[in-house]
Amino acid sequence: MDQKTISWVSYLTLIGWIIAIVSYNGSAEKSSLAKFHLRQSLGIMLTGIIIYIIAIMAVFSLGFFATLIWILDIAVFILWLLGLIAAVQGEEKSVPVLGGLYQKTLTFIN
Image (tube, rainbow, N blue to C red; front, side, top):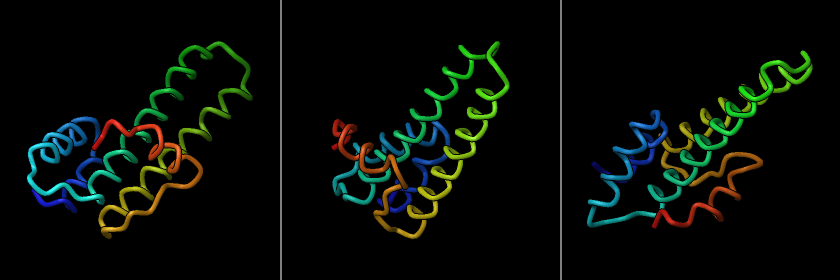
């Protein structure tokens, strides 16, 4: 699998991310593009999981909080879509707001 393909496959669910990281680690040529998008996609997935856990804990809360969770879910979807578009285009473009954080904290992906 070439590095651009690894980049966009990493956005296709957790299974896609696992396939991409295995392909990336097995590759002789490791590009910064694939590493960049592996970090971005994992960060987006982790953000979505955190929001989901908060939503489960707050299932009996007020309607305002439920609306806020719904808005955050839409925001995560938009981040995912922006990341996928950048990967398909072969660009190292961070997702808004959290992209820099993902690159700094998910450094175990080399």
